[in-house]
Length: 216
Length: 216
DNA sequence: CTGCATCCGGGCCGATACTG
DNA sequence: CAGTATCGGCCCGGATGCAG
Image 1 (cartoon, helix red, strand yellow):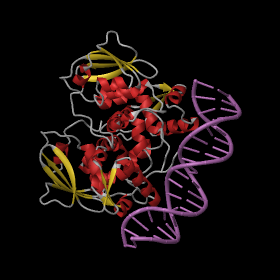
Image 2 (tube, rainbow over the protein chains, first blue to last red):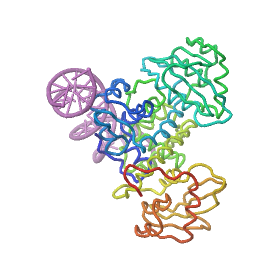
Image 3 (cartoon, protein in one colour):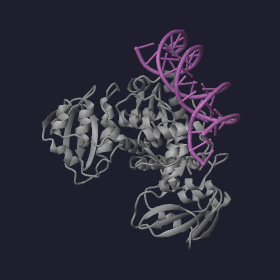
Image 4 (spheres, rainbow over the protein chains, first blue to last red):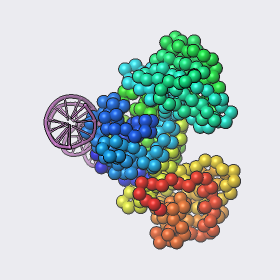
């Protein structure tokens, strides 16, 4: 494990001393999205992290009070560790424009829709209508639920969805983010059942800021 | 420069592909706090970063659209790069409890009060009173100004401060965060001129979450 | 079979020297 | 002042081994 501290009495530097190492924030992402997970689950969700690195990082996070170990090989975030949701989702929101570049050879897991949707529909807006959207992309179906002004994502299909979207992840996400209209998404292989305007009605707040070079 | 991407179609992973390398977020911190800076300024504020690394990171950030280069050796954040304020200050807020551990041998710059204060007094609260606090700690005086419900930090002394605080950084920050009372701060060498209750009146929102092990 | 530890090649990091 | 060049050492990544 990296012993090297930045040696700066600064909140950012000290935070990075804890979660700044390579892979560390992605391990926290897995625990944030999925809740408590076994070692093997983490290894699977991290798509090829070296096993010694995963063990190192988990030890480091446990020692620093970010992660707790239940019984045998089950890890979960401490209360303090759950507080990382805010910086992590803020980072996801900032990096949203980078998702305009298609997945290509990159891995994709349906569960990763959680930070993406948190970036797009973050915050609470009482004027936001209740809606249920079923998403089919990646390895398993997911359901976006808007209730009481808050948008959340759950694993599994919906009972009675207002809208069903299926297709490759970049098309689905482009549609959700408002970067693609129905025609553009259709060109990228996205199928929609239901009234697509329900998406725009969810995205009631500030528009997504422009990215580095993708104007769409 | 690191070519290695996480290879995941995930907003967090792609964000970390841009700003996840060692030192990178601290370079952004310097540009966020101080505005446009020359190469040498960055090198000085980063307290001993290797010069080749600084050059590598700046090249990488420029290529990815986070940083712009003005004329000769002056760097500034792009519009998109400025959006990193949110995840960075969120990280600073999360890492606030780590500041309870004294500076010790760690470097300290007065300018680093900016993220700390942003973490403590973040957000806008119209009920927050107007106040001016002069801080003497580190290499240069700073002024905390509360106007129209927003708290900001500026370099330099104040014209007519309501409160003047001086002492070692961990004592001053503990006092600002509400983790130390006047007596506790005094034990750590902090001198206060003025009504200290003005600080508590600024911190009107949610209390700071508990850290990994420092109950105070 | 899961949860790691060990080993090793290659690349990244860190410090210094050096140049326009 | 603004970087480039270089080199040792450590970290990362991938494969393998082993214990419960």
